[in-house]
Image (cartoon, rainbow, N blue to C red; front, side, top):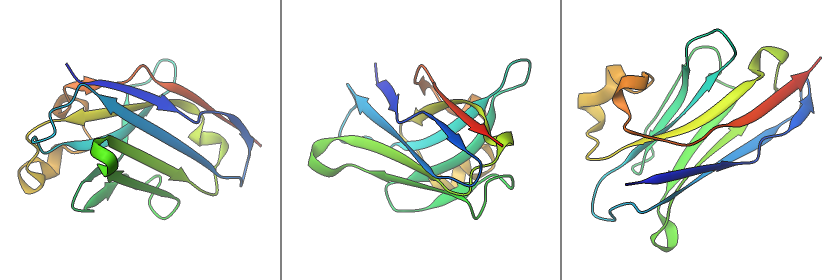
Length: 132
């Protein structure tokens, strides 16, 4: 069972930057994983923010395109995803979750890359708060 752990959450001011990291453990090195970041605020559905694969392909929601950058790597036999968040806004305040799916075929999953149903592994989430 793949385990995901997020780090890097913090409270920042509007316009500042923050980097979230997600480290995976107990994963199968030979499987192709896609990883993604979602976020959720109380009373709302979990929203897909960005997705990536090891080939460098990425997909972003319109709300973060141009401000957030996702990357995924497997350096040193580890599986890791990063979300660089720039020009943060108060509406980016949420709990952010890392997610992963194995045996990922990017073109087959394209329309589902920012949907929760696509992913079978989830982290516990980490809070990001942006003050105006």
